[in-house]
Length: 305
Image 1 (tube, helix red, strand yellow):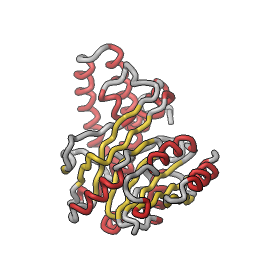
Image 2 (cartoon, rainbow, N blue to C red; image 1 turned 135 degrees about the horizontal axis):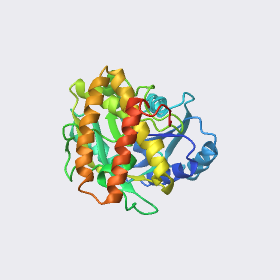
Image 3 (cartoon, helix red, strand yellow; image 1 turned 30 degrees about the horizontal axis):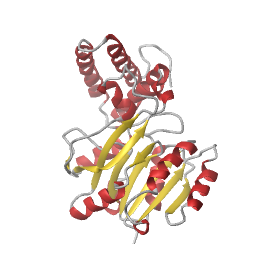
């Protein structure tokens, strides 16, 4: 019996996808109890061919590739959920590795907590070229979103939610809250986010408890090209602000978002005074670009998307 369906949305990351799949096929949960569904979202590289070769080399594992032609991580994840055969669905990204006990951790958790609907796990940042010296825990969050709330199963702290690249839920129960909003989330190479924040906000408003499962561990692999100043400013932080604007407008809370951003500027300036000049500079760059994205370039009159 298939107990867990693992979903991976992918777009033009064939080489990295294979790294992810290598960790998937090393699970200590028996292969008969899980499946992995890779959702190919309009890849123009050799993702299909390389996946088929990998699947052929691991015939004992249920590895499936399906296509989703609507662009974006949200439609791709929704397609994966629709294809899932198991009562428990877990979602990871195609730039991660999972620990051998990842699937078992979620299966055991949901078995032991029949009242639980949703869970997330630990996220560890992995830097193949080394962690940059300019990085602080504040500038690391939009890059890698590391997450560790201790060694015990527990509800998430107030205001915290599972990372989009490490979450699991009961498929039948969560379906009534709707899937991921197709208007939010990364679309091909445009790193707009917010789809998981919107998803979990709906669950929390419905009274659902978000559970933290520490033994479900992923390593988020950050390549050197995502650690350049240009990527950090224009591709990442600016689009964090765009995501916040889209979510705030959807919920008719844009003015509140602007007021919150003003408060964050005050905290950011105080934090910058406690850091080395290099770390302080990147922190201020982060805040500035997020503000630009939130304001829709009102301050500089041109788009940086």
